[in-house]
Length: 465
Image 1 (cartoon, rainbow, N blue to C red):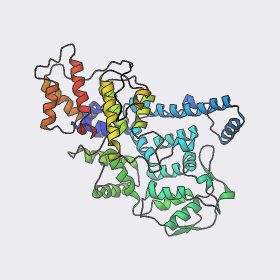
Image 2 (spheres, rainbow, N blue to C red):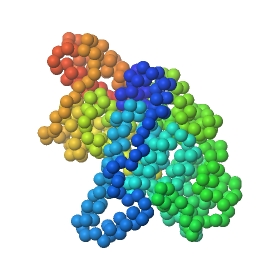
Image 3 (tube, rainbow, N blue to C red):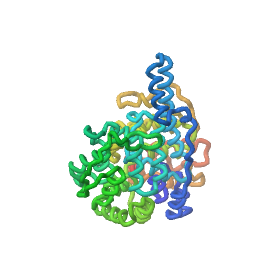
Image 4 (cartoon, rainbow, N blue to C red):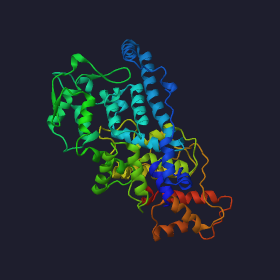
């Protein structure tokens, strides 16, 4: 696979940016990515959703007192806004010229997990998503402070139940275990005293704030330091700890580079991260530029986002409903803002179970044959079911290839774009599909090359980048 295609998949969600990487070079491409602008205007579909605590209280009261039809309508509006939020995000992933920011937002979204199922307030989920977007390339310490005070996180990790004399340790524990230091780098005493410091941190209109009646004003000892600490103080202390850089550099390497990064690499980049005072942008520049120089591919299993968006891009399918993409992701175990637990998606081998592999192959079959995917079709993609035979919406599909080439040059072209390696058996199979007398300018040449592409998408090697 050409480096530009490999890194387009790693830094974005498809091969769309390969030409830009070749034209600009990686360093300039990264600069454009970091400088990319984003819309911070509230989406219109949230205009009528509750945003203040008073509006939320009023909505809850109206749901309680409404008749069944009105209640159904109110709840339907909540579901509608939740789906629209996800569709809006998918649209950005598909259409941004430089999608690295959205890829990083997705990374942070899986690091600072906060699900819409538990939070239930769409405006808070939107706020959470915007904090991640605004700070995607910013400072890890500052981002952690903002997330800790987001209404979504307070709700998701039950800090609303954390009060003086009746402490809830969920947020305090996950702050250390999953968000910053990792298991083995803190004590149970740190968790308990962290919970005391977070007691009373409750919902606010724009961000969480302390409620004095529930707050614990006594001194707490946290990692050997004693004082009347608040949420910002906790994070300041955590970021003084020796092992603070390594959890996050390991996760960044797993997300972008290698499902099993070496500990030497984790420590090497982690030490640099500490040196640049936890600024994310210089860390990413260093990782991407240094790893780009290495001949390294086939180290990561494509996540479902990369799989489906690459498939749509290769087949030039621009009008597939974003909701169908969301449903495909859900079936593949990557339901946006609905991870199974606070640990987030495991990634790696979990992206390629036998069921997921079958669904990928069936989806490729449908799209390559010029049929659109629907919720009904996706629901029927089970191992023991036959492929759906019902009449489906027809769509135009085409694939890019050199119409002045021959069978071997076109096979090579697709291989360089799509596969990290090709062995003799694969080459022979591809030449049987696209025979020596293939005429690339013949009327049905596009369909023949799409058959070749469909074969490629089912190879284990296609699942890797």
